[in-house]
Image (cartoon, rainbow, N blue to C red; front, side, top):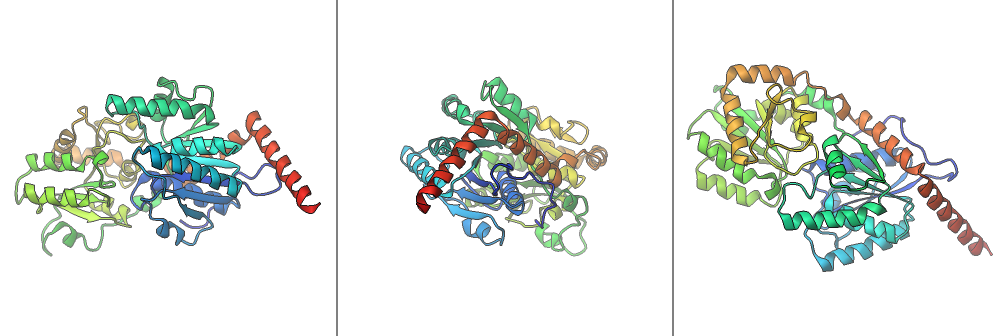
Length: 422
C-alpha cells in the first residue's frame, strides 16, 4: 500500500502534537480480512503523522509486519491468545495496561472479539482518554448457548467502557442494537477498505495450468474459489465433503482453497481420504488474490460468523458471482439470485452443492457474472474507508467525556514537566 493522500483527520488543535494511537488485535497473520483492515488503518494513521502502535498476540506474524518499512510500531504481546484462558487473559490485561501507560496512548482501538474484551478493560484501567472498538465479527452469533452467554456477558461488561463502536457492516450494527450492546455509545459503519482496482483489472495467474493440474492444450476447468484462513470456523472441511458428494473423479471442475492456517494438514488429509485430489487444490497463502479471482468462475464462503467478508466484495469487484452461507448483513453486497446466491441452509455442504450447481449452469452463471461486474463496490475503496474512519475518530475526540479526559491527561503531563524542570 503506497503513500496515502492527505484527506486525514488531524490532532485536536489544543494538543499541538500528534495523537498516540494503540491498535490491539489478537492475531495478525497474512490471510485474514480483519488483519488486512487493521493494518491498513494503522498505516493510514501513521502516514497521517500520528504515532501508531500495533499490539498483537503470540500467533501473529510480527516480523512480517514489522519488516514492511512503515512508521507503524509493531509489538508482540505473547500473553494475548485467542482461546479463553484465565491465566493468559489476566496476564494480557496487566501487560496491555502497562504498555498503554508507557506509550501514553490517547486512543486505544481494539479489533475482534478477544482483543476487544481484554484490550478495552486494560485501556480503561490505564485511563486512556478514548476507547474505540472495531466489530469485525459477531462472537455471539451462530455459536452454542454457553459460548453465546459468555461473549454477551463480556461484551456487556466492556460496552460501558467503549466510546465508539466501529462496525464493518450495518448487519453487525443491527445485531449489537438487538443485543442491547452499547446503546448509549456512538456506533458507525466503516467499510473494510481494499484496492478494488486490482480486482477490476486483474488477469489469470501465469501458472494457472499447473495450479489446476491441466495440460498445455486443455480447456480451463470450471473453477470455484474459496479464500479464507484454514481454520474450523471457515468450515472448509464440511465444504470439501459436500463438494466430493456432488462431483465425480475426473470431472472437469476444480475447487481452489487459498490461505494458510492451523487446519492445513487436516484438510490435506481429508482431501486424500476422500479421493478428491484431482479436483481440490490447497494453494497456501497467495499474494495475488486478484489473479485467483480472475481465474475463478465463482467464489464461495461457508462460514457462519463474519462481519462482511472482504473476499466476497473482492469477488464481485473482479466480476465474479459468489455463493455464501446465510451471514447476517451479507445482503449489503450480495443480491441473491442476481449477482450471487445466499444459501438458505446453514449447512456448509449445501453451500458446496449450490456452488457446483451454479458453475454447471452455463446460462445462469453468465447472467450472474454480468450482474457481478456491475456491483456497487465503491464504498470499499481505501479512500472511502479512510474518510469514514477519520470521521469516526473526529466524532470520538469531540465527545465531552473524551475532551475532559484528554484535558486531564495534558494537565498531568504539564505538571510532570514542571516537576522535572524544578
